[in-house]
Image 1 (cartoon, helix red, strand yellow):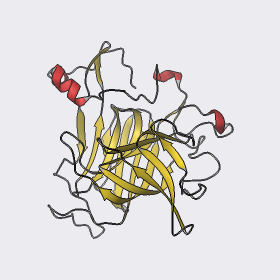
Image 2 (cartoon, helix red, strand yellow):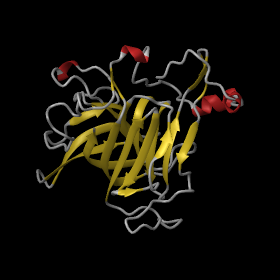
Image 3 (cartoon, rainbow, N blue to C red):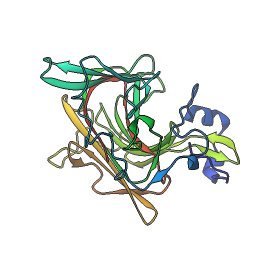
Length: 288
């Protein structure tokens, strides 16, 4: 979590009521990827020294796991390069053993699966340590198996990638929704001298209905039409030049916002992904 000793208040932030602040922040148990002070964790400008996963592979294709292996859940992550904080990630063989994939289950009632990607010391992977990374690219393939109805106040059903993730209230997120909406946003926990004020989302590009999925032919998915069934590849690139973060979001190889979106809020974090109101197949996870 970002621990700020100085005030981040603006007139807009001050306007947040306590009720709004509660509604916009995590409730119940709070997940902080960097407990205590963030500066306790080593920093790397990119992942070149600590590639993910850890054993010479350039991405996770789930070929190494036996059928039915629990890769991680909210209580434990036996394979340390995944840090599952909600739901269950399990290996599954299709037409055994022809196709080896992973399956992400989003349990009721919140129907949210979430995992962070750990990149530790490559020479001693059994003794990993969370690191802070600057530039990063996250890429994941998703295939929706079962969609669920959105509950009141919940996120729209769909798939989300994280970059520069610090805590469940501090990150960049790029998402593709079942209804065809796309979005690139940030969430940041506002503090004033140790007092938590709120955790508003800020749309960096796209809105809940204002930006539609861009198709390979250059057109946008018509309003009222859901995304096609089948595999979808999401990719979020996030790199810094002279203190400015440049973010690009791709779906199935198509640049969704016709170039980079800029922001300078987060200087480090890790990558990850989330599913909302869907149980889905997952394959070919990259972080580099």
